[in-house]
Length: 290
Image (cartoon, rainbow, N blue to C red; front, side, top):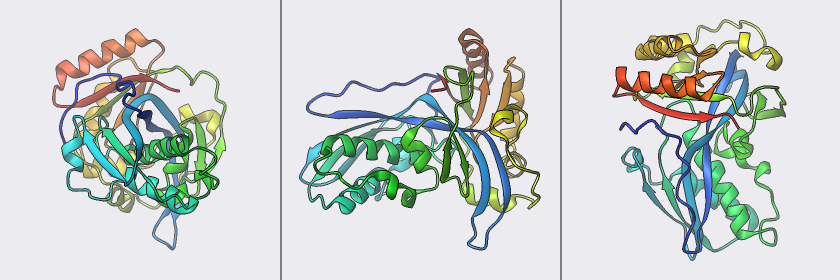
């Protein structure tokens, strides 16, 4: 993976008949793994939150579907012919009997396989774009009825607001948690891939109890220890963030991205400068929770 500068990226304005959506970065404020299922997946409880920055997707109506990928992490998707953006749009077209296409451009600023829902966020943004461009006359079957077919995180990413998730993360309940919206956040990734499957397989199988969304600060991410065992530099990222005066530091999802929450934006910005100076090869992103 390539490094992209620390930034809060909002993307270019639409033009030439294009519409635009931000694929907001997802973080898991807490993630409790409750057990292994017979189908190979895991029952979990998590509190999703979203950063006000991420990838940018533009689209316009076309005769067929196409995707152009730009941005610092475009090369990491070069060998992916069936990107989730195209899969999402084709799925909506199929459910609604739409025979035309969309021409997408994905400006990729979130690292892949990083625990912040990059692919799922891209798919969700593509669904929002397609819904808006095709309009209510053509889109009569809502994306909420089938978006989970694209991945367990996609339903949460479609809304991109704080939600409590259970099951495999696809059973969602809205959460209104005071003090979250607007909280300054710093995301840091060491640019080492941390695939989800091996991390879950490394989990020790111990159910350490349920997640109370109200007490999320005192909760945990049960995947931190197995992720660090596989990718030790994640421990270095967590340690570096804990030295920046953050009020909460935790790994997101199955890693390798870690996040830190701050009381004030200047404290976050100073932390980002320190991290960038001490670890210039790491990726970071400054933002605020939506």
